[in-house]
Length: 253
Length: 272
Image 1 (cartoon, each protein chain N blue to C red):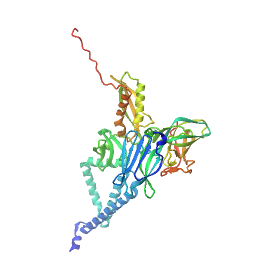
Image 2: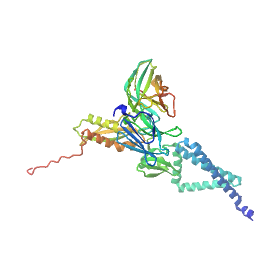
Image 3: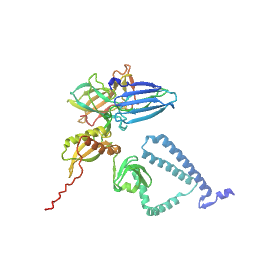
Image 4: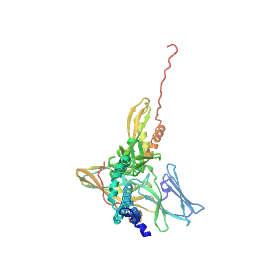
């Protein structure tokens, strides 16, 4: 199926039936005689998921949108993500560089209630290889993280339904150049931004600062709101958990 | 008539009336203890670990009842000194008679204080060869639910004095399986095939540290490869049942032989 034949992110009102087509994924929602909506999803591994939505009003409203990659295969990390860069980035001493990278996403289907509140009804990924775990640190004291191997992006690159775009500003305050091969940080307070009907997604950016502490090189990582977030984009936000600075103190090569 | 009965002394200084008042106060103590316990469970318990909640719950409940009992006896002029001395003697007698019971009880208290393992965590009690999830530490025994669903009750003394192997200090653990390939196969190719298959099909296997591979033995019939996989510590059941299946399928698909034991039998001719 061609990329532009896929369904766009956004809100859908269903009174009869709806078919959503996404990479490696098919979703069908339809009303049954007993006023119940049946939900059917088939993924790339031919697994079938069936759910039911009893509804007296005869119609439902859903939102198909990107969500944080924290739920699959199971929610068990402390909101940490481990991005392994396919190409390490060299940052010269006392300099700042900005790069665009891929940021993995899961896709959520929210039911929009009468009062406008939303409940997550289903979530899935169009590329299971980006729903994996990794350990940041040693087995004795490391932290379990969600894991994805990501590439640097050119300006017009998009990876619909699998990756969002994230800008990373890296400042090297050290007296020597450094190679950065991975980025680890909490994502609980990151927001996604998408334009309705499209598949292009951006996520909040990050600022990474290399510094020296007790003869060890560390990276401080801080979330930074997406620059163009006010330009008619829809926001998918979550309960902010921790918006402070996260320190990568177990290496970054 | 009724007052006379109530004033009747059972033993010196203790009347039926004083016993009745004591009983009413202790009953009130039980009610107060239940109310305090309910408030504790609603207000404070949700923010505390499960085992701490259970310990504090018991302490609060029985502590309040004992305080009421002591207050009641004191208010009625009942001398508990004699009872305490009596209890002391009784304690010695019971101590000798029920040494293991007391030992189990004290071990349980120490386990709650030291917390070598917390309720809900996976543990192996090495000395009795029991592996499972610790579901409860009671007064005299602890209960471990094994992975087949059965529950093993272990006396607290045995649990406390045994070597415990826990998995809770690290967020991950490692599991391993061994697989043999034919002597004619390319080992590097086989390892690459297995690694790709694990990364693709075993979702709970960590990508970093990646699975690693050792040639563990040049066996009689096969080159044996030890496959070691890291995964989240509680997800053994998600990884192990799949691992050998994934490896077998991958080697089959790649046309790599998994040999079985063979014996060559030479039959002598009738002339020899």
